[in-house]
Image (cartoon, rainbow, N blue to C red; front, side, top):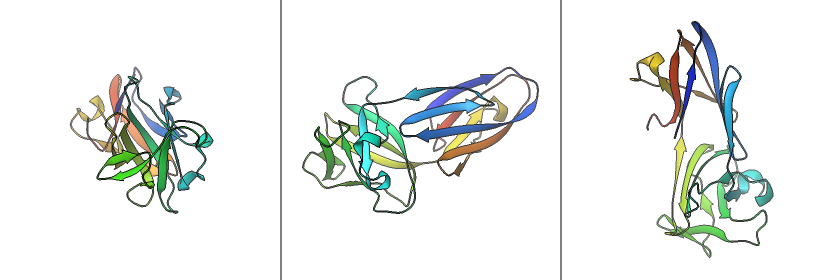
Length: 178
């Protein structure tokens, strides 16, 4: 996942922030940016009190059952969760069917690792899912598009500092990959 940003500016150092909060991805730098609000599947679990109504959301952009999204999970707890289709538990609820399979009768899904940012891919047509922990970085003309500038997780916010010299283009990207 990448996000293009471009700035026409004189040389200066800027702080870039990439924040996820309850399913909202905010992209910005020096107060300039846009945001997305994704709502399609809810990721309710131990890390947020098992409350679908306040759970982060993942989306099926093409409305084809192929969902993707990012969730921040604080360290601590069981790291268990379910995917649900409604703000309560009365809709379709997906759990772990084993072997990367979703099941409406399965046990709880589980985030790998001890907290952090996770990418969830869940296809409710094929009933397959993957969960991977993510790190974030910046790449662009300011590095010759050849290397990433690592960002640091500060609470639920990814931060990084870059020095720009005139017109620069850059992207945020997960796991230093396109």
